[in-house]
Amino acid sequence: MTVYFSNPGLIDLEAITIMGVNVKEGDNPIGFFGTGAKYAVAVLLRTGHTVSLRRGTITHTFTSREISIRGKAFNRVYLDEQELGFTTDLGRKWKVWQAYRELASNAYDEGGEVSKTPNPTAETEWRIDGPEIEEAYLNHDQIFLGTAPIEIVAGVEIHPGPSQYIYYRGIRVGTWNEAPTHFTYNIISPIGLTEDRTLESVWAAESRCEQALPACRSSQIVQALIQLKPKHREYSFDFDRCAEPSNEALSAIEANINNMTMPPKLQALLRQKRPAATLQPTTINPYEQQVVEEAWRLLADLTVSPFPFVTVETLGPGIYGCYLNDEIYISRQTIANGVDFLAATLLEEWLHAEHNFEDCTRALQQWLFDKLIAQTRQMNYWKGKADETCT
Image 1 (cartoon, rainbow, N blue to C red):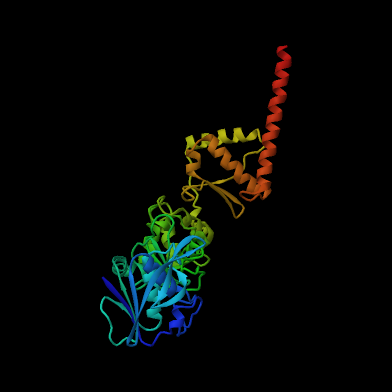
Image 2 (image 1 turned 30 degrees about the horizontal axis):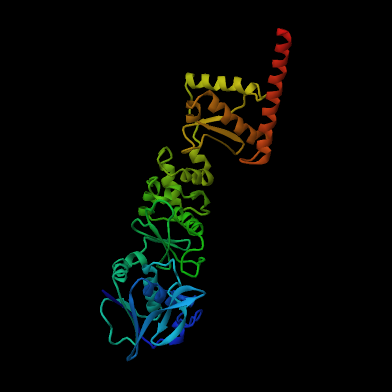
């Protein structure tokens, strides 16, 4: 199959033979590194495609010929009979779809098109023949976004349908590392790219999406947000990083507060923005009260006296206790997990309240280490006394 990339205007041949030359017109060109066409030519020749360029009425052909440098064979690229300063090893990790993306981007930047048929009115037209370029053409919508966004928020377009790809200004620039996303994300605010037009950091793109999704007001997005499953990449997003979630999203999360299948960080976001919504007290039964009393007896050895706490139905998936607004909250599941689990949770929250220790800090660790050593010394002391008695 043959694919044609055409546009008005005569291309300057030096723009495709000299590395680092970028002379795109327009306010917001897709390409800006000045290397894309050279990479594309090298990749296509390396993968067995034929590459030609019609400039006006003259057709130029790109080929490669073997050369040897320090005993190693390379295939140098030629434009007609002109030696060019690169080989087919340029972009050696590139796939054909990336070469397609470059030529298509260049065409679009110049107001052109991509087609299976030649455009006789075009002043510049690339002609590429080969099986893999056909596959890229048939997968055009996975390389260039063609759908309309449901909503645009915080510099991110949210498009319908799942995807394993990340897009920047409508062009595929990355792949989600784990599961595909429930929605398709197109970042439209500036973000860092490498020279091969891939993301410098997938984490940076993920962070943009984490900020954008809970800020949406669309009922379609909000309802999908609370119904996300572990198979979706968004399920593990750190939604509590969102500085300005929408009222629509917060209300939907609050209405589903007891839904244990909701993404855990949605509960954390709600607790951060509407703490009262997640902290409704509940009454414990006699059996649960017995578990609490046994936990207090266990903590007495650490000189922790019983203190008031509020039992709530749930604090969200994976959250068993928290210290907020001078109150300690314990989820009912914590009590159900047994005496030891409850005692450990009560101890942690007491340390937050009594000593202002933060989670995962050296101060918190040191207190626990000191208690452990003190308990060990005490055990050794009484063991020694018992040994003396026996002798």
